[in-house]
Image (tube, rainbow, N blue to C red):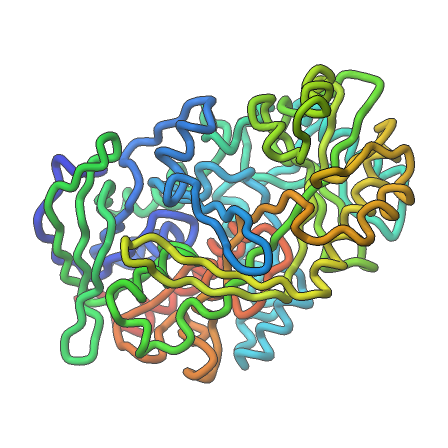
Length: 503
């Protein structure tokens, strides 16, 4: 069955389960319910067919929520990215696959009083997903010099530092370095190619180019949704779709799901919807080498570092094309011109932190997400330590000098010099970024402090489930897609069990 778009949509559907969002969480739920014999429909805001081109402007137009313009206001404004399309964020992410750290899993199991979240219990589900989405370690033949600098740096520094080339769901990667534009060769195993393909094989329908605007409630139970059809090219609206279902699963992401619940007026009855936003905020460090690097070539973000002495810090390689370099470097004027002339010899290492700071998601009058985020003081200190560690890694890997991605920062031949420069810089001096929103509808036992239980079911509304990164009880500390798929699998199985099978 083909994926329907705005111009061939059915006006009404009646199914056992409707899933809002075709990203990692929604795909995993759909795969389980369809396999269990449920008639299942996924509704997706993004395009029915991927619109990949090697162009940032094209990517934000078709494959990022709100055209890549979401900003977290608060302590210091910075951009927050989230994907869309049949495949969701997996279409345009860097395909990084980490399991949730074991200490975080134990914390969740304790908070939820649910041993299914213990490492020994959940790791077989991780392994199942890893096999299906073809997770493999990056190999040196496609890594590119940018990643190899990081891998060499980690090896040169030695224990307790860990890392090197990392695991990604890119089994046919050729190292073209443009994962964030969408894979042009089918090398990335995004969820449209596996989890959604499995669900479709078992009868799952997909209605794309349809933005859900309301959740239908009858007699105290969620019974369906209403979606607004739209042309992704002209943005013109084209009527509505009404879906009746036994179960409604919201998997629109940690921003999209609370935005919808506030928009349709249900949030006030469901607990702290949108109140506990975590972002894994980060910045970066550049290196300048005496040899060619071409940081935009090779596996996207194909190397990392981690130390048990700094468990809240996770540096990843970052690579950007020349046209985006200036915007992420913090360079302006003559200094930017000089750097661009030598861009072939620039390498980069991004710094992501597991944050204590929190924020919120609400809906503005025009339907856009309204984000706020307040940095915790210890997070700022953690970020700066991460930048120093990143500088050490790049220098150990072959860079001649390093520079923080901040306004007014200079080049240094030692990490100590960089540390001294950034020590008193305000947070506003740094180029900040986030692509990992989470925690906005957390799992928990208490309806006053959480939105869903450990099986993804809403405390305050029967028939409603949530399965996306918004349900994480705490900041995760690693890239979230693999955990989102794993939790989506658990929730799909729980729905099939708890809701007594198809209608």
